[in-house]
Image (cartoon, rainbow, N blue to C red; front, side, top):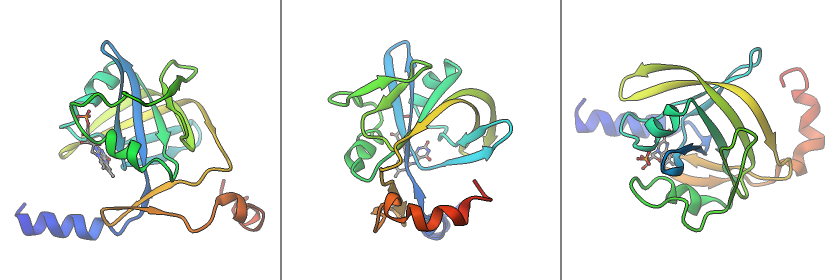
Length: 176
Ligand SMILES: Cc1cc2nc3c(=O)[nH]c(=O)nc-3n(C[C@H](O)[C@H](O)[C@H](O)COP(=O)(O)O)c2cc1C
């Protein structure tokens, strides 16, 4: 792919707004994690999710090697945490408070939600891996707002879900 094609790919695909996660786990060297935009719900029955680690990630092989991981869905005040966990080879957990999930994996303070997973399958997808996680536990903070990412920048919602809860929730009842 030429430089122009790569720029077009990023520019066009960047229009798809998403939330942000930090994938965490416990390795032989202690807690590990990396910022990951590529996350999706996959299956309700059985409950499964997808995460797409780059093949250049140095944290994923160590996390995935343990056969389990935790998805931390970031809240809108966690831009700096996101940036910190996007820098390879640094002491990412310095100054970061967390508590262990039921599976023992780091739940970062202030995250909107966490999802404990076991690695169910790993497929190749070009320069990324397609990791299927079987969900073993999860919880959320209903009053939190998510951190968003759109066109290469952090973004924020205009209002909190709790403000909209009463109005929107009935519309979603057949979907969730
Ligand atoms: C906003 C944002 C989104 C990212 N999304 C992903 C992603 O979906 N998958 C991925 O592997 N890396 C993603 N990264 C890059 C990793 O966080 C980054 O490469 C990190 O340095 C990897 O750390 P590691 O070498 O400790 O694994 C993202 C970074 C940022 C800032």
